[in-house]
Structure formats: structure tokens, C-alpha cells
Image (cartoon, rainbow, N blue to C red; front, side):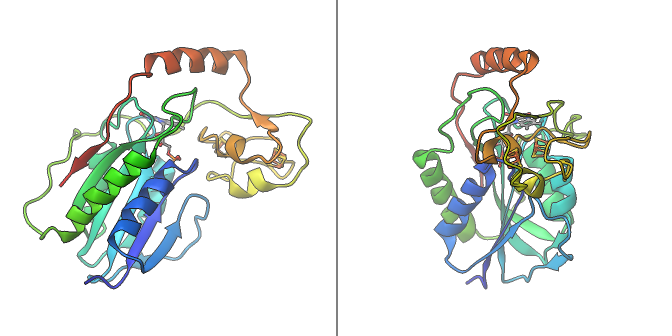
Length: 249
Ligand SMILES: Cc1cc2nc3c(=O)[nH]c(=O)nc-3n(C[C@H](O)[C@H](O)[C@H](O)COP(=O)(O)O)c2cc1C
Ligand code: SF4
Ligand code: SF4
């Protein structure tokens, strides 16, 4: 029996959080929640061998976002069993799941199951309803098997070493319209702390996660430039065929 289920995730637009929640709730009810999307300041945290961790991150350029890797690295296991999950926007997860597995093992976790899960892409209109209820049900079924599995041979996870280049974020810098009511929500919830106190100026360390666009209560943040809209239309067309989730046990 596990002491507690410990959720650790980076999730600017919520796909990863939804998947981690589905995985965790299918294997236990006693949860601890470490959302590292915004807060970089929590002290290092050590999990016990009796805990069970669920660790999640999105895929950026086929890798774990560098910001996420840095924040996840503050958690250490004591041969603590875990499930790892990456969510990606229907293109591919490339080396991200392997990278997350390597990271978890280097931090003292034992990977019992790994999942590459499709979620709505940040850009364009790609798989906009995902993860859907059948995705989350399949996540739960996978998690129950992973949690019951005995520690045995190492799980074979798709991906290559050395990893491809990626994880830096994109080059889109959201705009702000006159509808802005200066509520400060975007600046307070920016994962990269890239929004100045005027709530409009965006620094170069922006990772183009579009959390500010999704969260703005009055729809003032946007990416309505010709360059983005042209890219998004072409990208959405190219990635319209549904990909399925992959589970490794
Ligand atoms: C900068 C950036 C790079 C991305 N790179 C990829 C990628 O390489 N492959 C892919 O399928 N999706 C990619 N995506 C889409 C995200 O991986 C996907 O939407 C993910 O589920 C977002 O997770 P979240 O909702 O937890 O933030 C990228 C998104 C961003 C913002
Ligand atoms: S969340 Fe929207 S309304 Fe609030 S400060 Fe940011 S842009 Fe302005
Ligand atoms: S400013 Fe950039 S990094 Fe910050 S929430 Fe917006 S898109 Fe994400």
C-alpha cells in the first residue's frame, strides 16, 4: 500500500494536469499536489519509498520544456515508484518521454509506467477536445496496471539518445488589446515570469505557452498577427489526423 499519491506537474494550458489528475485518481485518494507551472521557489522535496509519484510535463519541440525539467529536478525519490506522462499536440513526442524517464530515474524514482498522451495543441485548432473522456478513462486503466506491477525489467520507452534539440519554447509573443482591465492575472500566472508589471510588455524569456491568452478573463491577450494566423491554419491542416495515446508498461 502506498502512503500517498504525489502529483508533480508542469502544465501551462492544462492538458498535462488533466492527465495527471486522471492517472492519480484512478490509483488512490490520498493526494499531494505539486503544480510547478508557475512557482519556481519551492524548496527541494524528498519523497519516501512508500509514496507513489505521478510526474507530468508537456512536449516542446520533441523535448521536455527546459523550465519544466529544472523545476521537476527539485524533487527526489527514495527508490519511489512513479508513473510518468508527457502530453503532446498530435505531432509527436519524439524524445520527451525518454528524457522524462531518464530525469525521473536520475532523481531516485523507479518508473513503473510511462505514457505519451495527445492533448489539444497550443497553436491552431488541433485535437481541440482532447484529452477527452475516453483518453482519461484509458489513462486510468493504464495507471491501475502500472501501480500493481512488480518492479521488474526496465520499461522500454520510445525515443533516442542523444535527444534532439528542443525544449526552448516558441517565438510567438502575445499581444494585448485595449480591452485589458489590468487585473494582473496574466503576469501572476506566467510560467516564465515574462510579463512586466504593465501587464503588456513581454520579455524575451517568454516560452510561447499561450497560458496568458487562455486565462485572460476578457480575451485581451491574443496572437492575431498575420504570421501566426497563417502558420496556425497550415499547421492545423497538416496535423488534423488523430493520433492515439501510447502506454508503456
Ligand atoms: C513551444 C511549444 C512547442 C511544442 N512542441 C510540440 C511538439 O514538438 N510536438 C507536439 O506534438 N506538440 C507540441 N506542442 C504542443 C504541446 O505539447 C501540447 O499542447 C501539450 O499538451 C500542452 O500541455 P499543457 O496543456 O499541459 O501545457 C508544443 C507547444 C508549445 C507551446
Ligand atoms: S489577464 Fe487580460 S485583462 Fe488581466 S492584465 Fe492580463 S491582459 Fe489584462
Ligand atoms: S507571456 Fe509567454 S510564457 Fe508567459 S504566459 Fe504568455 S505565452 Fe506563456
